[in-house]
Length: 154
View (cartoon, one colour):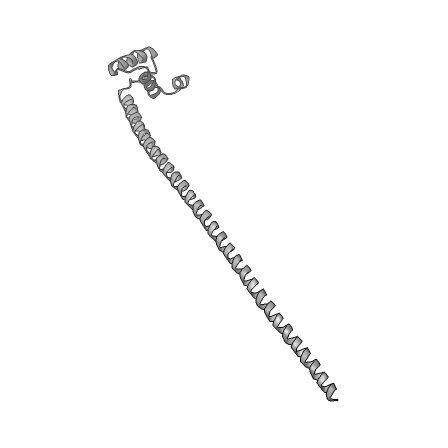
């Protein structure tokens, strides 16, 4: 009986020793797996950080290119706006010149004599000579002076 008890205790001790050894092996595996996971996590964090840096760098470069393009476009628009303003000023000056010329033609135009076209022609030629009108001035004066059917023919 003692022998059986010793044998049972030996079995228990052997089983416990085996369990302790397995527990120790499991603890080693746990430590190893934890360190492997930590290394993999660290490697992934490094890759993510590198990718983030690359993306940020590319975005900054693209933002800089876009800023330069916007600045160039703004400069071009400003130049075009300046040209438009200059053209408007020239057009305004030309319009004022033409208005003055029309007023001058209206003031110096010959009296229209609808009853006698020959008299009108003579008066018109005299007025043109006195005012030193060229062909363009004569045409403009005719447009201003004539009314009714003669205007339609002209």
